[in-house]
Length: 131
Image (cartoon, rainbow, N blue to C red; front, top):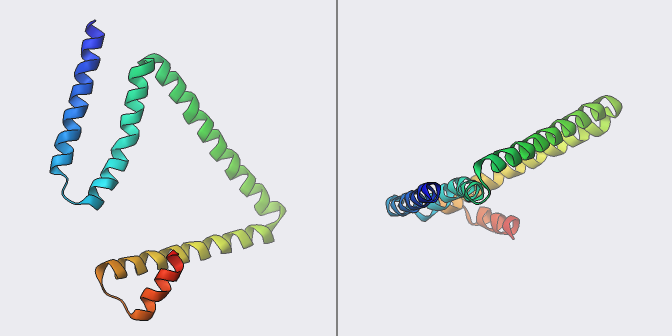
């Protein structure tokens, strides 16, 4: 019963924190970004409350380890491809750089449109990219 009381208290504290947070939050854009940052930790907390700390930590460690292994495997495959087929690796790198350049251009265009600093042609091009 004490454990349930503590859990209830924690839930109340989280709810109160969310209410306070929502009251202090001014802009809708800032709020959504901050909510996106808080949401994953809230979900993990709910999972931990449901299944217990010990089981949660064991499962969480397994998931983190599997993600790390997959990341390392992709890295190894890229290194092997670099040696085995340098042309394909170079082509992938060039494409990646081009995508990054386009992403940055879109970001700048969006900021200009949102800020109101733009030319008519720029806005038309931006609308074509977005749609």
